[in-house]
Amino acid sequence: MDKGSVIRKLKAAGAGKVLVQVPEGLKPWVLEFAGELESAGLRAFISVEPCFGACDIRDREALMLGCDALLHIGHSDCGVKACLPVIYEEYRIETDPVPLLRKSMPMLKGFRRIGLLTTVQYLSALGKASRFLRERGKDVLTGSPGKAACPGQVLGCDYSAAKEVEPSVDCFLFMGTGRFHPLGLVAETEKTVFFLDLESGKLSDLTPERFRLLKVRHARIAKAGDARNFGIMVSTKPGQSHPGLAEKAKEKLESMGRRAWILVADQITHEQLLGLKIEALVNTACPRISEDAGQFRKPIISVDDIGMLEG
Image 1 (cartoon, rainbow, N blue to C red):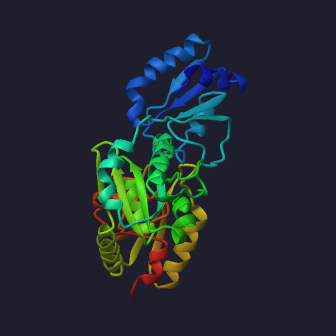
Image 2: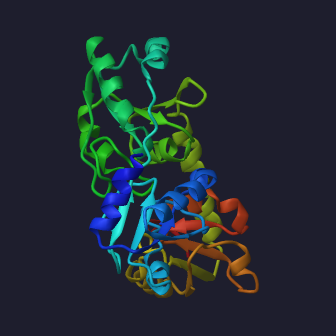
Image 3: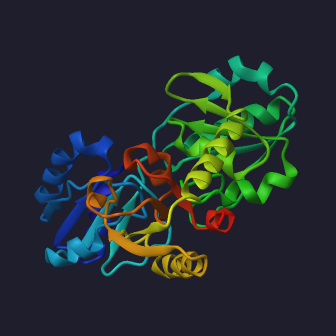
């Protein structure tokens, strides 16, 4: 990250006081960076709230604190409307995937047309991987996302870059770290999904996970089918808030003879639901909530799943 460029952007936006927001992994670095902002004549406040992506901007807090701008580090702009200027500064990790791909080519032998995907942190790896694969006779495609900023980029709630090229590819190759995004890709597409883990250095085929994910989903729906009282979760995070969708879900459940309440929170946790006589949950916020379903001790379904409830 070019710190001088960040300071110039803030000053160009007329910022004198700024709220700095970073993901958990950058917190060890943020105090030093805030000091550099102050040395440049800016006043820096640091948000220590968890940050889950560009959908989770703290613009209202920045305004309440009297800041002129929010500096959101680590993610790219995904079009969330804000109540004051937001400077997005991506955090790119330079890495060379070619040695790992060279070692893993036997697994890709039967696939000629490959859809290449990653997250914002590893976008610089796309070009290197694409050149290497094309030199070995592969056709490489990177689709255009709906919310994300760059070709081939996915978000936890946006796999449109994959959907765009799905009819034209034999498989997908996701490069990155962590299983959240590639497993989301498995759930959202029907093609073979390979995961090149840039941290462990291994290429794995996650396609068999599709059956497990379907099994888990149908088990949740079956368990929710016995519930009479539903909580519909709405997040107040700007890019995750869908109250209109929640109201439609409530109408649909009530038309089926169920009781439904819309539950609102910033970060939705099990502890916030204690004391509420809710038997099942409907998630209208971040998909990651459903991945963490175990902590809620209740079945979590999506709005689309409501139509599959029995009774």
